[in-house]
Length: 440
Image (cartoon, rainbow, N blue to C red; front, side, top):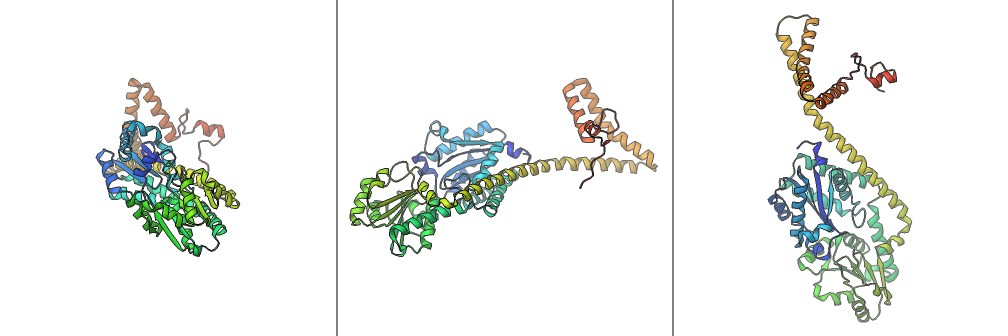
């Protein structure tokens, strides 16, 4: 597959946090994806150049294919199987991006511009892990490898040239600020994480920096809870003990997003009674939310969602919006540059072959005998014109459209004018006499 075809043949099909139903989220989105199995399934499905981008909030398959319609069906079926869902049921929820749109999408994903929390620092690491896994599995050809490497380059530029990475940290810092307003010194407070996700992981880091007295994590799936607790450097609490864990927590960070309320008004009310009405700060970082709206009416529960915390961190909003715009400009700049480089690389073999052909003709003429410069150059010109002349005469008798295309190519390549003097029409209009402008 030619490098210039990489963009045109790129297909990205996936399911992300915006559209995934709770059942699919539970099965697909993981802190520790099983890349070996995922990529083995991709290979068995017949995809030759492909990678699986797996994070806490998306699973996408990126592939290069000359048959996008068939590949789209194959990739949709794979995602449905992984989600344990019917393909027809899942299909309307899938995101699909082809060609240049697929390139732009991958660049945005790597740079955390398409994340639930824009600028999340963990996303780039997860993207690189996906890239490494596909390469180790032998599923990356030169073209797709170049695409993913360029996506990583974009992410590095965004992180180094913009303030985008400060966004999620500022939200987490705002949450810690509110927690201090509720509880004072956090060195005497305990925190409970319901699930993790990117925002939960950032919050865990911020709470550790605040010298939180205790950090505990729980999740309905014990295997995932163990992995999350390791990442968050938190103690593990079995899910059946959720009610007791909530009652013991001064700070609750909810990150499950399972499509139903994990923290109901009844459960929080019981926890507050067990706490003898000591205040509780609850951060709802899930999409969809984990906290029943009625919890906000309970005293003394202080509930903040991501929008509330955005407003707490309002002073940095203009800067974050400017950073996001700058990041998108970088994505588009790198997209144009990547496609330009790929096109130039595709032209290189043809130019090399043309140069080699000219050198062969020159060597043949020099080897044919002693010729003066005039005779040698006349003979070289005749030989150079022989094959193009034959092709033009053939096209003139068989295919007028091909003849017109060949003539346009010759005129463009050799700057031919209608008067045969090597002067193009544009040059005559500009008064350049067929001469190239001097480079400055």
